Image (cartoon, rainbow, N blue to C red):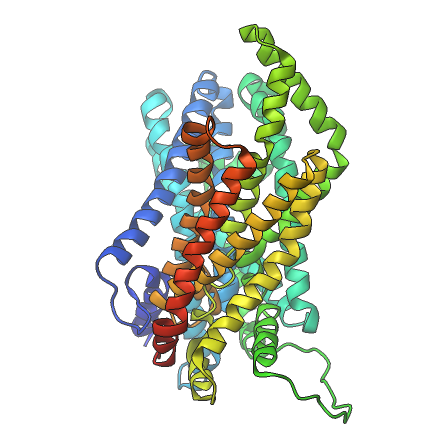
Length: 550
């Protein structure tokens, strides 16, 4: 039984590579594309880890007394990457997987299900940890062969495994907290998750802005860093053990195994209770009022709204760019004077370099500002296509829509209309604020608003057409359709490339022939024409395809 459950767990873990919309093996370009993207992610993590290890090795191997800090910082980096990469998998697959209740209804002992789920989480954390830690070991053998000992190699292998138990402990606790909170948020669950995510993102950006000074100190003052890191006993023990200290190695390994045993024991007590818990919001009682009759279109749009606001991941994955647009607009208004000063200083510095007139350069910069606004707004909006996963998110419920006595193009149109309502609510006021903050003329602002509206409509129909072409209805969790859908990936690529291509076209081809406002009008007409062609397909062949999806 455990063997079958493990096979199922690994099939779910790697389903992005081989499971299609009907549960069949994926072949050809789609599987190759997913494998390529994941390979690029792995190479990026390994590349950054290798560069980090090379920099630390050149600094910390010079003195044997500071060499332990090299491994200590490698362990911290590995734990951080592993937790970030696997904590939400813990939340989704260990606690809130869609098939948990079904599996518990089978004659399977709960400890077996827990072991298999926990093994999947451990494997994910171990894989992420290895991508960071193994380059550290290899660089150590190459750069500091004099510090290599047989006992050190043994403890490096043991602590490589032991650190994965620490990661499992931390991700299981964090995942449990997320799952526990998710079952008690009630009707405010989506709002709370979105706010927490945005707060975490802002905190991350603040941390990154302060990171430069820390990195400089990391490589310029190793003694001070070693002294400070020495107060963090886990990192100190890991580093000493990797250099061959048996005392620290044995203690670290025993504690890591004890943490694994502790989390497993706690989960055996609480696992069933968490799995069977539901949202405990207050029951909604009828107020015995007579509901007003709504139109078909109004009912379908209301249905899209309810689905959208019931899933925080739907909001964050499909609307994050729209959420940040108002922030950009407010910052443009608040820093209006600072932006003008920055443009003036840039014009003066450029003029001093090539001997041109600063006033002419400043005038040119202001004239090109609408193109820059188009690029920024197009990039944020183009990566936020609400319709790209909307068909996939219907899942098995799509048969209910197909059974309604309505034309399927009404269903498709409601999805496009919903996308436009959400996108334009955030985008249009933001474009106006940005235009005012950058001191654009009224004509430029009107053109940018028109182009933004046309692009929003284009991405609405384009995303829906892509999702009809590549639907994913046979998911076990909605996040699969949101994150692993070919239509979402393709729409994001087009959303990134479109503003880049049209911006480069202007600067390299049309800058001497067309004013920015005229060029942006031409782009709007082009997007409008393509949108009309896609909409014709949706109203005919697309509606027919939606009718028979299963």
